[in-house]
Image (cartoon, one colour):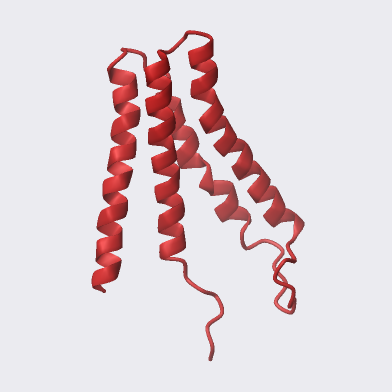
Amino acid sequence: MAAGLKTVILLSFVLAVGFLMIILSCALWSNWLPLLVALTFVVAPLPNALFAHCGGDDFSTDIGESSGPVDLGRFITAIIVVTGFALPLILAHSEIIHPGASVMSIIGGGLVYGTILAYSAAFKQDDDSEF
């Protein structure tokens, strides 16, 4: 119980730092376009979560075996994650945002996405319950 509470507190702190960095990357240079990075990293795990339970065979014994919908969910998630990292770089390269804002939004977005992944991994419920 105490380990779960400590995990939640740590993850919420890291998530708050990630959002703070994204908001500071917008506010310090008076350009709110890096806020799109927060949106992409919050939306990124959704396809994986939606397609995770599609096409699972209860009788399959091969661990490496996966289905088409699961792979599609991973592919869409990968596209969104790459977009979240590439968007600030493209905006900084085209001089729409400051390079410092780009770095801060990439680090903040990475913290946000890493927190979401860590939370889902730490509190994953196993469907293999024995009766």
